[in-house]
Length: 94
Image (cartoon, rainbow, N blue to C red; front, side, top):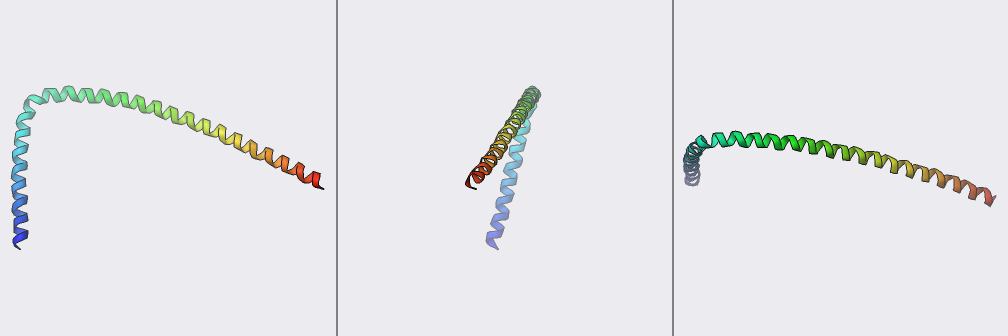
C-alpha cells in the first residue's frame, strides 16, 4: 500500500510540475503567437512543396511500374523463345 501511495504522490507531483510547465509555456506563447503564425505559414509552404515532391515521387513510381512492365514483357518473350527452342530440340531427337 505504501508503495502505491508513493506512486500516487509522485503522479500528483508530476502533475503539478506539468501544470507549472504549461503555465510557463503559456507565458512564452503570448509573444510567440505571431512567430507561430509565420511558422505555420512556412510549414504550410513546406507541406505544399512536399506535395509537389510526392507527386514527383509518384510519377517516378509510375515510370518504374512502366519499366517493370517492359521488363516483364521481355521476360515473357524470353520464356516463349525458350519454348520454341525446346520444341526444335525435341524434333531433332526424333
